Amino acid sequence: MIDPGSFRDPSGLVFRQDGVLYRKINPVYQNQYESLMTSGLYNCLVGQGLLVSHREIEKKSSEKGTIRIIQPDTVPFVSYPYEWSFGEYKDAALTTLIIQKEALNYGMILKDASAYNIQFLMGKPVFIDTLSFDFYGEGTPWVAYGQFCRHFLAPLLLMAEVDVRLSQMMRNYIDGIPLDLASRLLRLKRSFTAIQHIHLHAKMSERHADDGLSDKAKKVPFMSKFQLSAMIEGLIRSVKKIRLKGIRTEWGDYYSRTNYSDEAAGSKLQIVSELLSEVQPGLVWDFGANDGRYSKKAAELGAAVVAFDIDPVAVERNYNDVKLSSGYNMLPLVLDLTNPSPGIGFGCRERNSINDREKPDCIMALALIHHLAISNNLPFAKIAEWFSGLSRNLIIEFVPKEDSQVQIMLSSRTDIFPDYTRETFEKMFCRYYSLQSVSPIQDSERLLYLFKIKE
Amino acid sequence: MMNHWNILLAPKNYLDPGTGSMIVQYIIAGIAVASGFLFVMREKIKGLFMKKKSDEKIDENSQK
Image (spheres, one colour):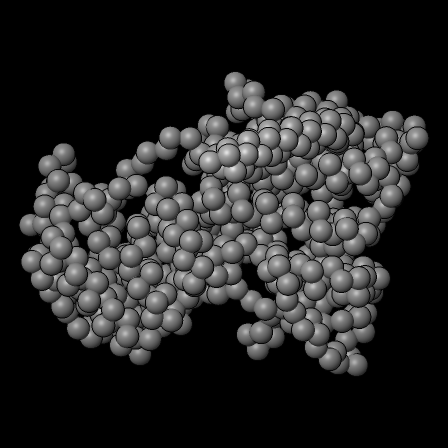
């Protein structure tokens, strides 16, 4: 089956067969592919962990019009730029630029600089599109520069200078944030990076928008390799300098404000560990991961973990922890569970919705149900139905109404939740799951449940 | 020296690079060359001072 997002590049396409991901290379890309492999560029990039490695597969004689089939290494979970924290986004941008810089040393360039070409593996960004390399033409500027600015620089500057939540604009603009729009939003922000790559770039694009209507041959000034390298170096320095400033959010210090005693926190971690050991999941989604302490436990027990949270600052902290640890197979991502990532792009199928990606073996929903049910008016039945469509196993914490956190939530609104009870919770989840165990968290009113999907 | 666009608009480049994005790079590259030069000079000058300081320290230590 051909990947629905793989149709723009004539160099090849991505397809799946028996659940395995392959990349087909068309004859038009033969020379570039051979140059990538024989010049030393592939080994250089794979050696540094910048490019995903692959192996060549023997193609069938029936596959005419294909010069190679390659099987790339896969990532446990495909994520998209609107789900990345600022740090993840910045590292993805730097990876793209470093690859472009290395490629130039081998007489090649990146012919596209899409943020969707970056994925995360063991906490590190890795470039996944093996067919993005082209020959460097002496005297030519970087063909993907405009795309780089739309996909990386504009979102990073908007997140840093205006509001960290503006990464969500990438959901709307699949080919990156239009530069005229970024320029308007950044109009009072006159950093040198924004002046060059956004404001001036947007003005030049506007001025030359109608060049195609002219009969005259289009000409571009000669740009030496030295100038191009200097520009890439300048971009690397500029991206490194973009930093988030003084952000405080609702959840950033959640665990310093919870009502868990030390005993309760220890008991919860112990029960979660036991339940994870029982399930032995390969891929875990931790919904509402916050500081990621339970995600890390799952990762320690050998699972690949996607740690989702609505708060970009909590996700940023987790990402920094993952980077420092250099051992957690954990990917922290920003996700609003009440409005999770939809399918976007042509036919709503170029980028998958959260429902259509690699499904987890286990979902963890700890200290989350009251936020969904009370703060967001989501009925238990709806939550159970959605979870059951995603995962066979569910570790979920029930937080009763008597809990002080729920009482705080109800103190500022009318209690319209007569069905928010343990009995209704169990009844609704047992429509889809069979109950495996219930464990009380010591020194607390809370309960930890393990559910398995009904066969 | 001027180059024709044909190279950039060849079929292998399936992205439309955009004329503005191409031309603006010429300006930015000029700035980058100048700032890169300044960056290197700054590092060199910094290095000289650091060396001078460390030499002074070595001198002080040897006098002790």
